[in-house]
Image (tube, rainbow, N blue to C red; front, side, top):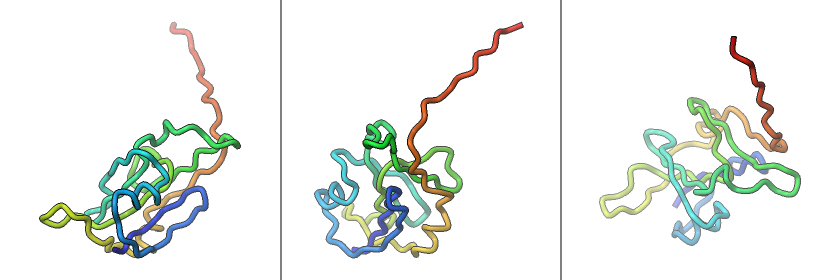
Length: 124
């Protein structure tokens, strides 16, 4: 099956043909639990369910992807497949092109996570 793999750590968007099983999905995303989100009218994205809760790497980085039309980043690797699934519930091949996926990405963020500084203002 044709999938598109987004790897924000390497800033890569690649096309692969794989036999997609649950075990293969876990391997591709490098996670223990999986979540999904609607990427477009014709595709669904699979991601690490821990998302931004995953601890940063040794450099303080948590690679993530910002997409156009979304208010929050997606942390970690993303596998895109087709939508809808078959009547039997099987996943279908991704119909998007690499260019369509790349144009949906605003940026990759691989910089170290910095602690947020809050400004407290006294009320009047």
